[in-house]
Length: 152
Image 1 (cartoon, rainbow, N blue to C red):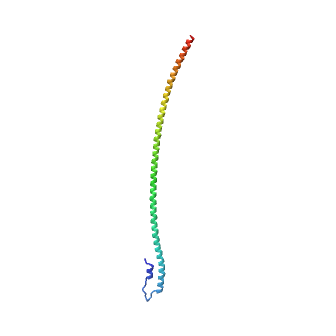
Image 2: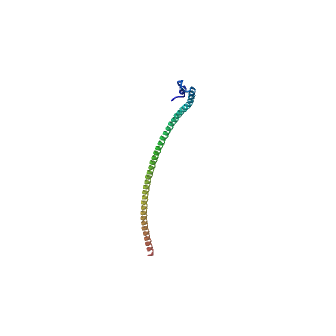
């Protein structure tokens, strides 16, 4: 690409016959140099700005990649935490069922023991009742014998 200095320093050979006016060519070259210089400066600034924006874009892409990997890691961690919590909950339920079953078995055993004790007490009461009945009958017989002796 030509620089504004290249345009300014460009010299044309002069022809005597049917040549261009040196003054008009110089004026045009001056105008062209000014416009080209302005365009060249804008182009250089635009390239500089493009480089800055490219650098910023690379920086933001790096940040985006970091955020994406962090998000993936967070999702993975969340899944892992959910799985661990689910396993712990399952274990708690399993333990609770086991404890409840042990407690129920213990209560059934205690109920059976109490029923046996009740049956034993009923049996003892029946024996006691029979003995008391026998005692009362014997006492009644004794009283009848005493009454007979007094009446005779």
